[in-house]
Amino acid sequence: MIILDNVTIAYGQGHRRLVAARDVTLAVPEGAAVGLVGESGSGKSTVLRAIAGLIPYSDGHITLAGKSVGKRRTTAEKRMVQMVFQDPYGSLHPNQTVDQILAMPIAIHRLDKGEARIAKALSEVGLGREHRYRYPHQLSGGQRQRVAIARALILEPSILLLDEPTSALDVSVQAEILNLLARLRREHGLTMLMVSHDLAVIAHLCDTIGVMSRGLLLETTTADAMASGEVVHEYTRQLLRSNAGFDRSSVSAGDLDISAA
Image 1 (cartoon, rainbow, N blue to C red):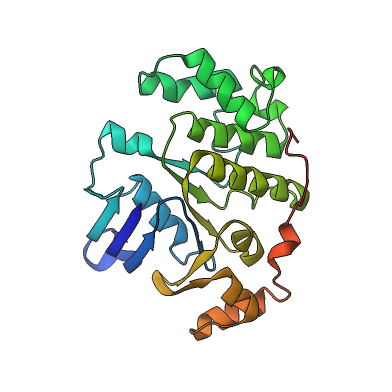
Image 2 (cartoon, rainbow, N blue to C red; image 1 turned 45 degrees about the vertical axis):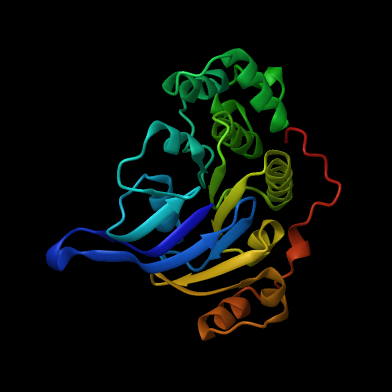
């Protein structure tokens, strides 16, 4: 569903040119959940933004659903790929109600049955009618992130890009949001690419994990291999040591209720 073929992303020109990601090659099968880990500045979020079409890439090719995409995206391509950002408060307009926030993409893409789409999206993320006309500051962090997920889902995308979607949340709420994302992936057949610096969070949702540092994708492995320390690159071993006690079950919420929280 997502193929990156030697993708390079750079800012500026000449002596001011900064390469944020270099020759990144990655394949994400349809319906899979793949994670990218690495320290801040490693290029993870830059790769996500290039896939979403928010920033251009300099070299290489990006293929989505079997079609090569360029710097300009069609309306259908934009609708197919949606993104959930790190800060649920900063990514929502503070002066718009939840209803207005969810109505905006419907209006932009000229979709019908707006009322039904909004009600369905809220229900799918565990929010009720009582949340529909509230402002972001009247919601908890977890509720705000649910609204951000609902906004992404309302366009019925095939690909969901997740940029550290739980890092701004309390640990207990992190588990609820991760369980929600796992359920939505199953129910909608979504393909997910998620970035995080937290191995336990990534491993809870993703089976395949790519390790990035200084703009390079150093290796691609599995969550089980990471948990057992069976990795190739020395940087990955350092990352594991920095996440001492890494255990994918540490964020498992089991039978946690995913109602609004």
